Amino acid sequence: AEPLYRQALEMRKRLLGEQHPDVATSLSSLAILYKDQGRYEEAEPLYRQALEMRKRLLGEQHPSVAASL
Image: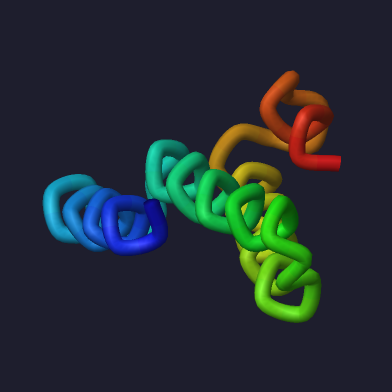
């Protein structure tokens, strides 16, 4: 699954730009995979990056920000 998540992330970055809510979704999906595999040190930076991106793009009070928290 990891190669597919990485492929989706890179595709979204290329097609939508580095700063897009769908890029944050891909980051979060990859983080979830790592968390489920017990790869917490790899998951945490991705979770944080997705959270900060969502805050910046969608605002502090957006439901997607709450989900990231």
